[in-house]
Length: 104
Image (tube, rainbow, N blue to C red; front, side):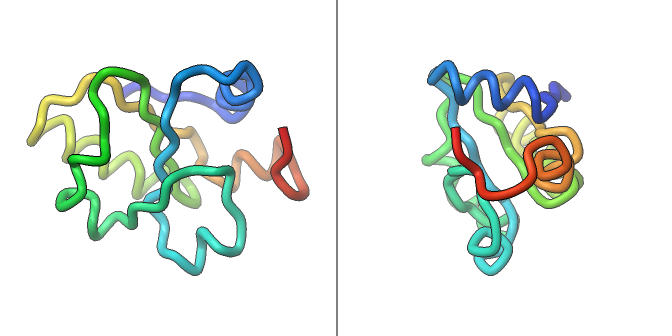
């Protein structure tokens, strides 16, 4: 599984690279703090694969990086995706590096 850390993700966002962020947390978690990702809760990802492109990097994240890693593993096994990355440490790691509201 490919991973990306908070610092590298921040640089990609700042450089406006052609990536897609997907937040697999629950709606209440997404409301509390998010970094601009599309909300597709873990329980609904497999029914929403049409929203996950295979032609550009897609970065999945959750609170600690565990749920997103499971989602990536399932998507790779079932659909053969090879463009998925996991945010190492999830939003917790992001907030340690970039505390406060998310602003580029």
